Image (cartoon, rainbow, N blue to C red; front, side, top):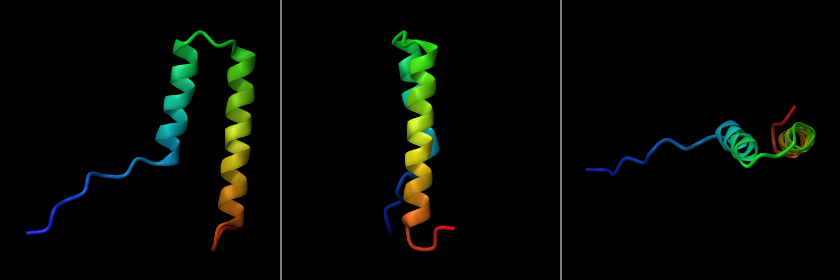
Length: 54
């Protein structure tokens, strides 16, 4: 009998968790916007340079 693996969490779940944590820690809205922008740009770059990225 093969062991079942739990479903993998996606980058979207991790990204959301980081933003929620920043909000809960009392970060300023401008800092959260900068963080979100930087992470989304990083994700876009990684997707574009990965094999098959378009």
